[in-house]
Image (cartoon, rainbow, N blue to C red; front, top):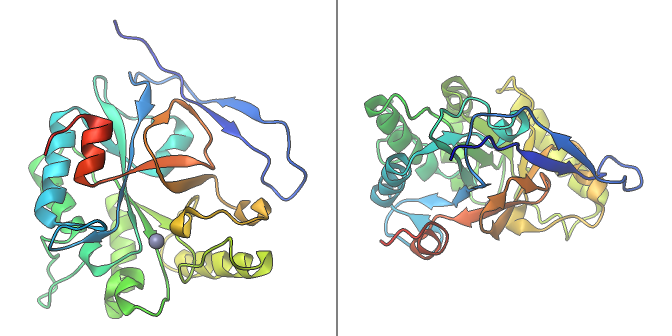
Length: 267
Ligand SMILES: [Zn+2]
């Protein structure tokens, strides 16, 4: 029997003052029928397959499997409007990428989108299946010691990529300026890292950055540092229930073991 699920989440006091009593915010009822939702986590896209690397071929199979199993891709920020727009009979899935490496989004020397990069796989799949929209959330880094991680590894093309992702309808999220462990630096340094990243992103992306992926999943001691974000993802944890904390969103690492464990998918 179909029933309408009302997506609930708790807003915890995070805005610089003493913790407030959690309030339950009720989003608009949707026609979506699900009791939990997955947020998938990818790092490197490339060869060979590894603990932190998914091959383009396996990533494509993941998308095909999700499509065949009635999942519908959304951005993380779509949580804020209760996953509005998910067609009847479909379930939301959020695909996320951390660390903005070239394998996630690369242009070839001739200027074409690399079909083996994650963006290339998603674009081609969308072209073949227009009912699978271009949605995913990319948690990017601006400047690190490893140039491959700085806004997808091609400095001259960074602005073009950010604008292209936004134009396609994808979401850009924050991952701090330099992959800074927020538990290891002062609150002032953490605010600086986040502030510098957001200032850089606003040059290229007009939409407000509402989502953060914590480097290594580590929370700052002073949670008011996160006050500018509405959604914060962790590095693990499994499925999210419809009643969840938006500042502690669980993720599933898209590796064979976790596909088996959380989706019963045998690879
Ligand atoms: Zn990271």
